[in-house]
Image (cartoon, rainbow, N blue to C red; front, side):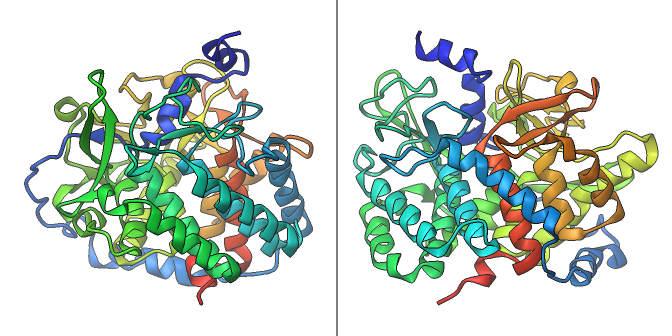
Length: 442
């Protein structure tokens, strides 16, 4: 059976992995006018609402039910760990991963040990094997890791898991996530710090940023590498903040003012990207994922706390107005196209559901399990509590947590993935211990 057929048989599509490494789009560098009156759309009272809301949330001991949820999430990781390399499959039973998901695994591993799902020796052994395997990865033109690898062989591959001798290019967004995870890991497991530093110096990290923005690459048919500005509002700031921890040239990307304006959705002003899909062929999804990851992993700064709170508020406002329960994000699907971004606003439309190529899939809007866990950890509102409780049947103690529930059909989205289960563990870590970067420092 061909690799493409393997994807299909497992309920997976190439679009799934495209979505992972192309999150929020890749586009040729742009020259957009600055967005004016950055904070004018939000009145002073609402500007402080995010920080007030966060101040109300205090860390607490996990309940027995939450510990059970963590154990279920770890089941996915146990089932999908490759013993030879220590890498974990991005999707259930398919030996492929992206750097984004390697970052997810490292965060999940740290969370699992801290929560008590695994013991400290398992954390160290698993982490050591992952770092060793990362040091063995073949690189794109000898510079940076490829977008996707075979989890068994460590070979560079394309999105169908076919070997790609020269690689298909790198993703600055994915690298940013992995670098952030490695930074936290070196603090949590200091005996690995020297190995991680050596790993970082073996990669040409300066290649992932240019002129203050993130820079990815794509292998053309001619086999030459085309460099591209990478990232859109939300995802761009997440990865850029990680890059800045390594002294990389990503300050413009980390500060969204130049490419951000405000759009009212369900009566709530949310941040959107002024760079249009029609101009740059890169989708512009405003969704939960980058904002809750910034909160769980780094902690929110002034701008990101405002953006996160507004993105969350719009989703609760939709439920209040329509009765349609809404917590959206990027998610894997159990049917074609197998991966989509359920957005608050994307490509010029409220509540658009987008494929990586901009195709709309309105029937696949998902109440996202990982969004429910994450937003509940961050804000702990009545709405997040209720939504999370309604998704409890998505748990399998043997297989892990499924992705969510489809809004239109009310059927479960039964896709099993590393990222969903990693975010469950990260969210529970945040509930008890706070953000990773603030929890673990030398």
